[in-house]
Length: 412
Image (cartoon, rainbow, N blue to C red; front, top):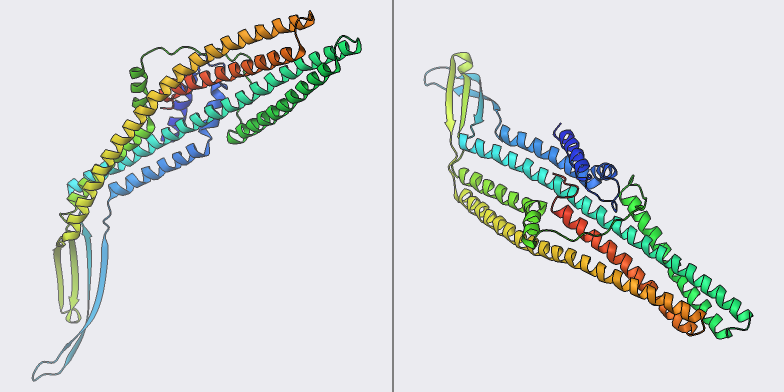
């Protein structure tokens, strides 16, 4: 029931997050369906059920009723009388009693285990979202490269046709025709490689996330400059980071385990009732007893080891927090740099595109060489491709930042 409620709440949250303009990303409802069906998320759901059962086990306690039966034969040899033989038997029922403070600690341990499983499930969803985002942008980038090389091939095909016509008219040397055909062949090779990479990326995306529609966005949108300071973004990412939450909850559970180990230095007593039938039924005995184990050094050593493990868990959580804060800062600055890089790359692409157009007009007027034109075209193509990829890099960095700050596809 808890898992069903979680899935419905997650779907509602994701739909609300999708209200933001994210034209570059796949539809939010498809993302919900695909990620909730992800095997790692399903495994986390199963682990949650296991922890719920483990909580019930801890609350019930490790002690159970024991039933004991025994039989014996008594021989009596009185002086001056005949020997006697009696069949006798006894039975007892007993059970250790868990002390009240131990019961409350066990209950807290069970609840902490469920909290850990819930955090791990959120982490699985978040990591699946990260992986989807990365794989999606790999596919977009490979498709962008394939389209760019297709445009370059189309341009060079027109150029080669024009050069061949000029050569036929005696207005261009054969060398220019060879140069144009060579440039076209190189571009076609690049296009073929780009198309293979695009198909491979699409197949990878399809197999990793069955059911995700592989439709390129009609409008990618443009990267937006980040608002807010680095400290604000880092604080948001630390607040919602599942890895850090897991480390902290592990520390909490380790402290509870240490408390439970200290409590075990005082053993649980056992109580029992017994009945015995002796001398062939001439004597019937009913009794009660209490059994208390005498603790030894093993219990003390176990408590000390548990406390040391709790201290280690706290130190690990502190180390995780330091690392994640550093990674969050680097991620914020990378997103900022990605936006600036895209702007610079786009400006360079525009300038080189204009330079290529001017070189083409000069060549038509007989004021330049074909080699200059081909060089300008190649530079313009490389700059346009770099601008496209920089744009997608900037979009991916921004979406990754939003995802880690739980401002995009908030799975909690």
